[in-house]
Length: 615
Image (cartoon, rainbow, N blue to C red; front, side, top):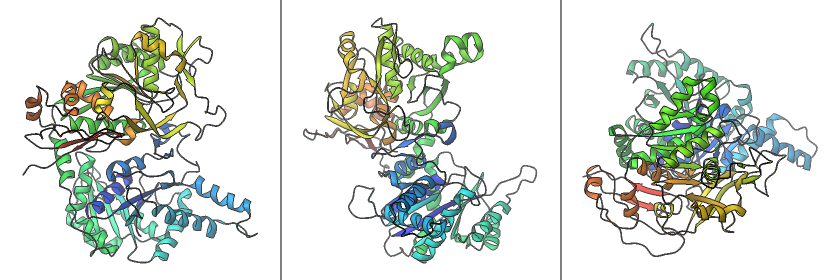
């Protein structure tokens, strides 16, 4: 096993996660199998109880792990499925050591940071690195480890010490350290300054770690003389100094690494030169260039309460992006604070109220993402009502689906008191209830978490077609409340279809309004499985409906070319070809796009669009 450690300099937020993910992409393109580990030095056991304002979104894994959003970057870039143990926290390490001490595993010894905590960190890394994450048997070839925070943080010290010991133990040729640091340009001077990187490297060396590669973040490309100066003062060869300057989209970062031959430096340091190939990134390059060429826009109104921090909805944004690229549209997200849509805002903040409604009414599609708590709920209900009544494409995720159910009960079924027990425990019309297996006393890890199976009950619904007419899908969940199953017959009689349910048939997973162009709610979080080139099915449906392509996609999923197909081809989006999962025969593939070619897969987890460069 080979290990690549990615650390950050004296400034946080430099993009260590994207750098680590991009290194993985390049190594994978060389024919190597790659896994990833993220180390977060905070004391929390996991990210599950942390506010999105504190640490961005909580990313959910197949096994129910609630982890740092950087693991989402790893999964999206490398197309892998990680486990909860791929996210190491100080809380997890100390908890495991204390549990051992209580059992008497240390045989009466004094338990100390060195060696017990540092040994536990190293053992955890080696154990998790051996877990296959790409669907193949056996361990990966390379494990990319990202150390969160910045060099010199007090809480990082045990990890720094452990990784120093680890690098010495595995030896040269098996360990490589990539240090990400900022090379700022002061406007008053107009030239790049290398001192922050010099001090950062000096601090790293003082802690027992020596960088092999420098990844220098900057606004613009660095001249060779800057690299030579960094090489002189940081004792790193010029060939091993990589410049990650600002780019139009993050899909260019792996291409920057390849252009600057970072793969050659990595393979040489890890003694893998004879085992690897020249990185093949044509598909990645085509996707990055396609994104830059898009001009026609699709506007999506994101109605939520964490709109002040985009990282709170990072996976949702990425899923929208993947779908918009598949539909050949440039994504524009209008952030709409849900509380600004409410009547109280009209009196207390009329300017914000008017601005919010202008954004909502000008959107091509509306999305209400997941969330917790009652703040802004009335605004979300108004957004769902506006989308339903005005035939605007709507996607509700988790809470967003429950919001759609509440709005339908109030407006269509005339149940004025309809509500969720989360917001009103004493409501006389509880259309959303607390799940029996949930805990009201312990918050961490007590929700319905991880991958769960949803069975389609209506074969010809939009969702089933978008997923490729499969009988079931596996998607990730994170919720404590669910639609009241006792009220489902009343809803269906009124016209709200529950087209997806769990294996018992009592837990509602997907809703649709057949009379609406696209009005879909899902109890799960499809954004967590969306990938570049493999957009989530329901997100693709939202974007396609928002730019009036949905009929073409739905007919293509049946293996039919729609009447609009020639027009679709002229705009470059591919003709799909559908595969069944969970039973059924392979359908005859549709004719490929006359412009780009392509294929469109559904594996029960979402749609898969391959882009092929034209020859």
